[in-house]
Image 1 (cartoon, rainbow, N blue to C red):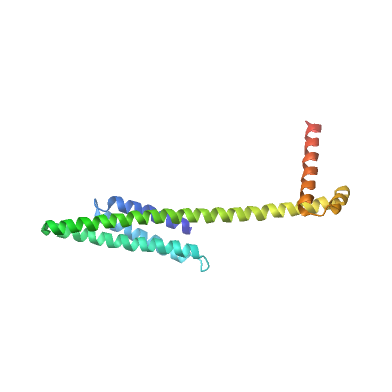
Image 2 (tube, rainbow, N blue to C red):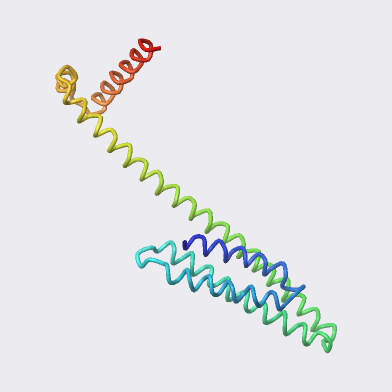
Length: 182
């Protein structure tokens, strides 16, 4: 659920960038929606999940920068009628710097998403490894109950050799059964 909330927050941030200069009212609504999504994500975070805390802090920092950007845009629009040329140039430079900061934030957000996916993949691999290990243990226990295989397995010293023997017997038995019944 937390990742879904953060994904929605990223979508709102993207929409915010698109409508910031076109419709400030819509941009304010998007900021408020992002704030609510991040508050929900804070309530679902676990105490021992440090990666989630770092990711969530990054999202909160981004929200603060976007709020500051919104304030600057609104103040620029209000005071743009009375600005002289040098102030207008400074405002444009500030806007350029803010756009660069937003670009950096986007790349950081992309990196965070990539790290989250990598950690999720790692957890999936660990889970699959534990499942395969339990299956291997079950096959070994079943193989030890069959008299002939039990004698062969007692003579083998290493676990890897034992697993190879078990799986080769299993594959050959299944192959013979396939040819016999086919």
